[in-house]
Image 1 (cartoon, rainbow, N blue to C red):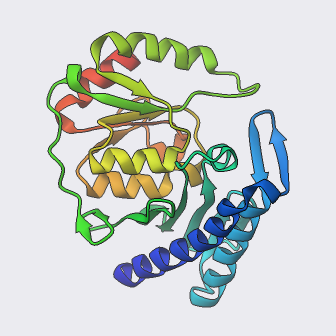
Image 2: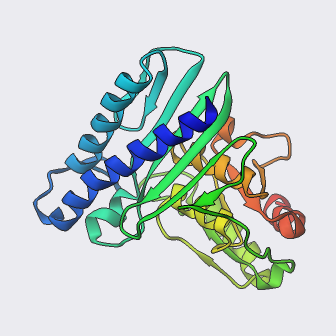
Length: 259
């Protein structure tokens, strides 16, 4: 069923993208609330998640659910993990770097991932035992082989989050050895960019499951190396992710881990 599951995930992510684009064009009228300092939710997020949940309840009624805005529902061997709008702050400020993220977890293993960017009409997708794709094209970029030429993405904590100093120290250690670091504001889309070769690596601590689940599938099927803060750490368990092509992963990881 994995191929059909990918078709379902792609379809509902794109449908949610259409909803978000309607709000994007008229975002000045959105009702916005704050979860905490620097962390916003709008009626666009909520409408998109409700649509995805309703479609999945019809198409896959036996499956479980984990959504950013509505939490967990229905314990089941298979579970859909959804971020209806990753990059809400970008969205609200008119910055075109945000996405819909939909993943499927089956018996604890991530099997399907879709990251849909409605503004650029790009859908990054993957399922186990098949290549990662951008729209209808298999991802096969040339992978960088020298850390000095590598461009990395990351996330920087905001508001009152407690680990800002950790990230500042990470950047200070890495910057002298690479071509640069970007903080673009959507972890799910950043991971898809690494898979596609637009970024050469990414790291961030303490992300939520819905931020990274789809991206992890796409990265792995694109041949990227993916670990947590230690080689034994699974990002889907800890929320901390570190990824890069195999040729530069060790020196990249060593710089960050050697604290």
